[in-house]
Amino acid sequence: MFEPDIEMMKLSEIRALQTERFVKMVKYAYDNVPMYMEKFAEAGITPDDIKSLDDVHKVPFTVKDDLRKHYPYGIRAVPLDRIVRLHASSGTTGKPTVVTYTEKDMETWNNLMARCYSSAGVGSDDIVQNCYGYGLFTGGLGFHYGAEILGATVIPISTGNTKKQLMMLKDMQSTVIACTPSYALYLAEAAEKEGYNPKEDFNLKVGMFGAEPWSEEARKRIEESLGIKAYDVFGMSELYGPGVAVECKEQNGLHIWSDEFLVETIDPDTGEVLPEGERGELVFTMLTREAMPLLRYRTKDLAIINYEECACGRAHPRIMRIRGRSDDMLIVGGVNVFPSQIEHVLMNIKGVGDQYLIIVDRDILDSLQVQVEVAPEFFNSPDYDQTGFAKKLEMEMQAVLTVRARVEVLEPGTLPRSEGKAQRVLDKRTI
Ligand code: ADP
Ligand code: ZN
Image (tube, rainbow, N blue to C red; front, side, top):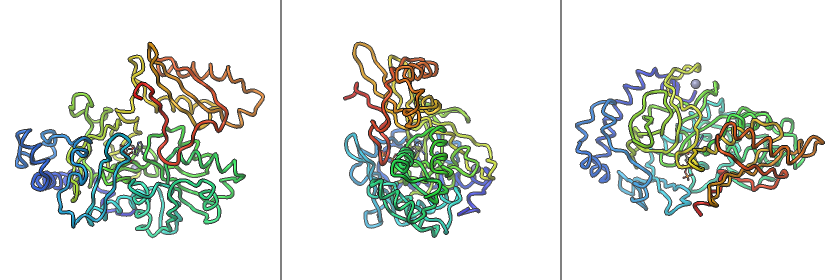
C-alpha cells in the first residue's frame, strides 16, 4: 500500500475526514470562485448552511457546461501564477474543457496515481510501459508520475507505433502495461501477427486499464492473451485525471479514494439523491482541490456504489462496473441500449473477435446494425459459416436487448483499431 494510514481508514473515520474537508471546501469555493458565489445566491444558501455531509443536497450541482462557459482558464480559485499545469479534454464537440492544477494539486494527483499502482501490486522493481497519450490528455502524464513516485522505471512511449511497442515489451521486459483496454486487445492481436508469443516473449504481469468502459469478458480476453492481471482504473480530467478509483487485488469494484472525493449517486433525470446500492449518475465533490474546486460535479457516468468494507480491508466505497455514460445510451426505436450491453453479449460468444462497431441509422424507423469481426482461429476453421454465425449473433442479441439488431460478420482485421479510446458507435442520426 502506498498510503496505508489513509487507505485503511474505517468508514467512520473516512466520514469524519470528509465532513471536515467538505465544510471547508464549500467555504473555499464560495470565497474564491465567483461562479460558486452566484450559484449559492441563486440557490438561496451561504456556506453557513453547510454544517455536515447531511447538507450536501443543498449545494447546487456543477456540470460540464459550467466548465465550457468559463473557457479558457476554467473555474479557478487561485491566481495564474500559482497554476503549474494545465490539461484539456479532447473536446470533440466544441471548445475543450480546460483544467488547472497548483503544485499541491499535482502532488495530490500523483499520490492518488501511486496508490492506484500499488493497489494493483506495482512497486519500485517494476518496469511500466506507459502507452497512454502524452499531452493535453491527462492519461499520459497521470500514469507517468504515479509510477515515477513509486520508484518504478517508466517507459514514456505514449500511444501508437504498435510494432515499436511490441519490440519494447520484449526487449525491455516491461512488467506493467498502462493503456486503454481496447488498445490492450489490439496489442495482443498485433503481437500474434508479428510472430510474438506474449506469454513467453514478454514479461508482463499487470495491466492498468481505463479511460473507457470495458466488460468483464474483455478483461478475460486481455488477461488470457497477455498472461496478466488486468486492473480497472477510473478517472476524468475534471477530477485531476485518472486515479479517482481503482480495483484492488479482489477485483470486485473500484475503490474511490474517499479522502479526496465525496461521491453521491443521483437520478439523472430528477437530480434526486438515490439510496445506497441503486444505479445512478455519479456525482463527485473534490475535497481538497486548490486550483479548480468542483462541488457536486455531475459526471454522466452511470454506476452502483457499494459501501461495504472490501475483503482487502479497505473501506473506501467501491464503484461497481461502470455501465457507460448517460449520454452514450442509445435510444433505438424507443428502447434504451447501452454499447456495453452489446459488448457483453458479443464477447461471451465463442468465435467472436475483439472488434465491433455499432451503427445506428434512421430510415423510416430507427435501425441498429452491429458489425463484428470473427476471431481468426474460427474464421480459418471448417466450422465457420458466415450467414449461420450472423444469424446466431442476431438471436443472442435480441434475447438480451429486446430490440432487433442486424449483424454483419466481417473478416478479421477489417475494422479500424484504436490507439486510445475506441470509437464503438457510429450514430448516423446525429451526423
Ligand atoms: P475526455 O474523453 O472528455 O477527454 P476524460 O479522458 O477525462 O475526458 O474521460 C473521462 C471519462 O472516461 C469518464 O467520465 C468515463 O466516462 C470514462 N472512463 C474513464 N475511466 C473509465 C473506466 N475505468 N471505466 C469506464 N469508463 C471510464
Ligand atoms: Zn478492496
